[in-house]
Length: 565
Ligand SMILES: *Cc1c(COP(=O)(O)O)cnc(C)c1O
Image (cartoon, rainbow, N blue to C red; front, side, top):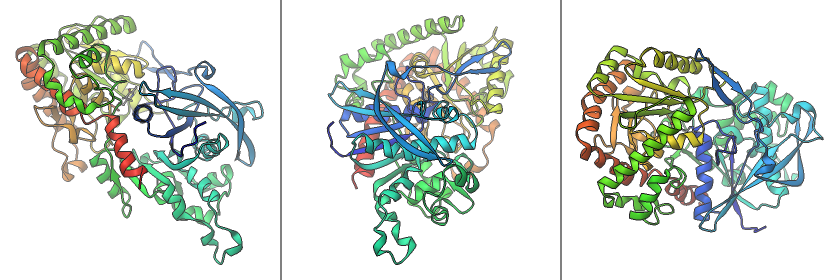
């Protein structure tokens, strides 16, 4: 093995390929895009995650619109190589063995990145322990803490056992923060020379090794565990007093632990960096806005067009600055083909016919309340009126976490509505959202809708995927869109500007009202009567949005701002 010192990138979920169902949403897809860009750009990185052998879940929807969850049984041995080395961690004072699967991501540039998937499903373990790496985000707090021990502590041990030489540890969200404890133990000072118990912990050395990216803009979203649970499950790997100093007095807060032990911390969009600073005063929090992997998130028809007019775009997305050079007619033609591909996909997946020419709006992401998937239905009468001025159809997809009842209720509401108004507006909910479906949707609709509750959308990335395909964003000014949006030039906003005052009193009705006004007075008329202007905005989506919001740019910034310092 080439023993160049690497960045170790830790993520609870990684969405790298549709065949490896170890992701639930944007966090995992971002991790996958990060890895692909590192492979393309030959950034020395190795990734660590859990095998999640039952996946997140497969989603079915019954006749009443209820979500039903099934485990996904997939076989890593078809795609990955298992290492014969097993490593050990202690959980509830038991020895738990972990084996590692290695998946190699190779780039056409000749670069490559190893992804290590940790797996406790080995003979030596008890039946219960074999399940630790079965369900992504499954189970209770105790189950989660066990997973985080495997990821954080087991992950560091696996890297060393396999001979990797690590120069930085990058925690993608707080789930991997326990790795800092393993590093503290590794860098413990020589006990002989101790005059103070504190002094044996070399916090500064560990901080120099760690980079932390936070993804959650609200306090309740951060993993925290009671110290009773920590004592029982993790044990006193470092003295409790010391752990409380690093992880918080009342609970072990994984975000705080990572913040206290990382010299570089960032949020995932400029606004999110600011919001994080107010959540965690006293910490220096930077911002590196997310991006998506251009080659992965561009559909076949657009790829051909870019290859013809912007050769080299995939490994140098800055070249999208030349999007003007694409002839209007050819861009529209490629888009129409993508739209037709989507129509056949929808027909196959759901049995429903959709129009190949009507204005098509797409909304797909995790179904959780703050994403407000049903905001567009706030005033049904108004929405139906708008549809009389110009036909449109809406495509939906997304999973709700098995324990997220409000999220599931939104799915049900949309499915109920789709039945009630199907003679006026065609609404299709596609079940079992995944990365493959995501590409079909973000490339085959005309408008990509996002209506999160501010400031909850740390970044969001699906709109960046849409832009890579000339699909126009129509979104709340939150997360990345605050940076990408120029009204009427790169797309359209929904609701007020993201001023401090508007963050605390968001009003669904004000947002919905603005959505209706723009849909009625700008979007529908432009789509049907001013194709030239529409295509201009499509080109700006490529030339101004995809140009910047890609993971090549993002990773170059992680290298210069976080990894080399
Ligand atoms: C990109 C992507 C997401 C993230 O969508 P957001 O709108 O940014 O939340 C979620 N799930 C899948 C499958 C994706 O491809």
